[in-house]
Image (cartoon, rainbow, N blue to C red; front, side, top):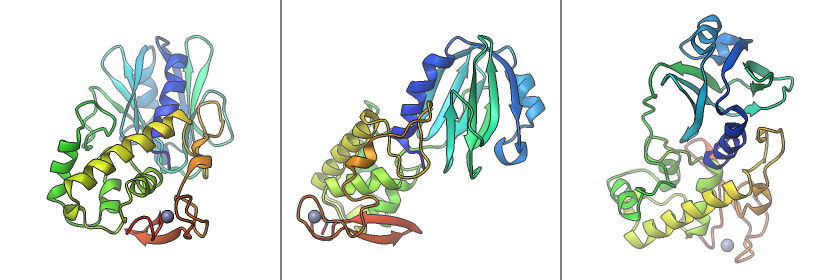
Length: 264
Ligand SMILES: [Zn+2]
């Protein structure tokens, strides 16, 4: 599933391509599966002639901000893509007034396209890379929480944009066991996890995301961070630090990868 670095990579790819262009036409197939809260005809009417001012990211959402203040909102779900050239899984086509188009493509259709007259309220936790997200704030949010730290990091209302890949990698880097009770972490550990999260997310962006399965950028190319994974999807391989085999366990129905020796 695309996480913060993948969605941010797509945002950076697509923004210059659509910026200051107006939407000329919108076509959707399988609209009931793909559009949320709006029918295809209404969406086309709402978007037609509207100029795209910028593309923002909030958590795993892409927000196409229109000059009118209206917003087109896209969540990529499991396998969603935003593409500059169509593939065979295109569900929504957006034609621009310069003769080009961009496409929302999705094989499994857990992604969603929606429209909002105003800037959307998304009920998400803080952005981990924002300047106002500090170790003190992270500590404040963690200390009252029950449950394990791995599941908490995946909770979008707790922290926006982190998913299975980057949560596993950050916990490894911070040497914290994914089953640790969140509220039991000491400030020094929270601070280590904070630094680790920012490091893996920034690195994920730098290498244009992780393509372990479907993720591709807006030109259909693979990311590069999968070559740098230390624990995620590495079950049975030897830890790069201590040579112990990486283990896979299931936490909250999600695969979690860790080194039992480094992350005690
Ligand atoms: Zn290790």
